[in-house]
Amino acid sequence: MKTRTSVVITLAVLILAGLGLGCGQRTDELGPYVQKLKEVDAYNRKLVEYRGFLKADETEKAATLRQTIEAYLADLETFGQTNDKVILAGHNALKRKLEEALKKIVQPDFPTFMISAMKQIDLIERGYQAHIEALKKRWDDEGRTDEFTLAWPTGE
Image 1: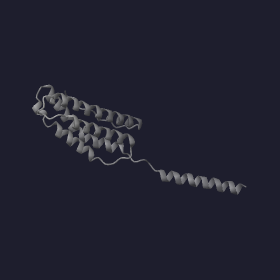
Image 2: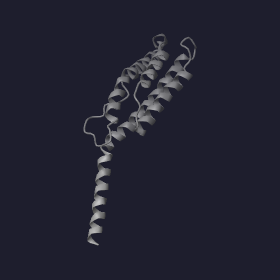
Image 3: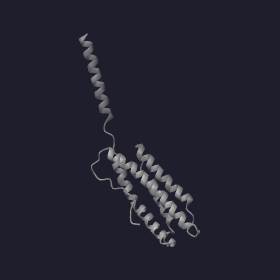
Image 4: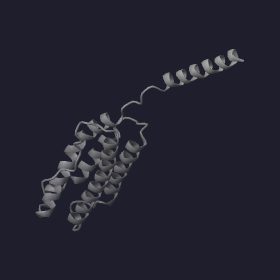
């Protein structure tokens, strides 16, 4: 009886040990993604700059807004695939905001360009803010000690 029990225990220990070795540590996708997302800060700063031009009634200086949004979206498309559902959901939501902005923005020579452009910049800002809030929560939940530096640029 003791022999059979010890064999069962030994097998159970070996199975658990094998499962433990097979699991391994999860790959860090959050850190590299946050670093990559910092690269789009230039687009966010440019959108804030456009907002300043529009508020100052210098709409001609914001005529390239559509091209900036297109470049922003194209840059986000170059990000690699992720298995992290929080990152993926936020990333895709931000891309959808940019696509929506491209659909809604009017041409610079339209009388409503200023209003349309301001609305689209606001739409993108809200999408970016929602994305980085979710990333920040994950960052904090993981107990990371380095500072989370993603933020919508100020300067208006």
